Length: 157
Image: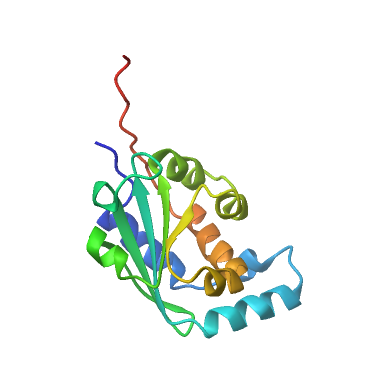
C-alpha cells in the first residue's frame, strides 16, 4: 500500500506552517517579492487540499489527502481528510505517489506546480494562479518537514 500523508506528518506540517515565512525562508529574494507574498497570503481564507493518487487520472477515491486550512494567510489547521472533504476544498492539488516522493525529496516547488507534477484538480484556475507564487512558497516549506513516502511497487508482468 502506498502512503504519503499521515496524522503525524500533518501535525508536523501544521507546526512548521504556523511559523510563517522566516527570515531564512526570505533570504535571496527581493523585499518587494515578499511584500507581494504577504499581501497575497493575507487576502486568502479557505482550504488548500493536497492529494496523492496511485496513477495520474485515478479517481479521487483511490487517493489520500491532507487539508491546510488558512485564515487571512495564517495556517489554522493541517489534517488528513477524506476524498469527499478534498472535493469540498477551495483548491485541490493532486499528484501521483511518485510525484510526491520526488517533491518531498527536495524537488523544486515551482517546477512541481508549473510542470504539472501537482495539478489543480479542483478550484478556480484564475484565482489559484493569481496567488501562484504564494502557493509555491507555502509548498516549499514542506521540504523542511521530514517525510517518508511509501510507494507500492508494481508487480512485473
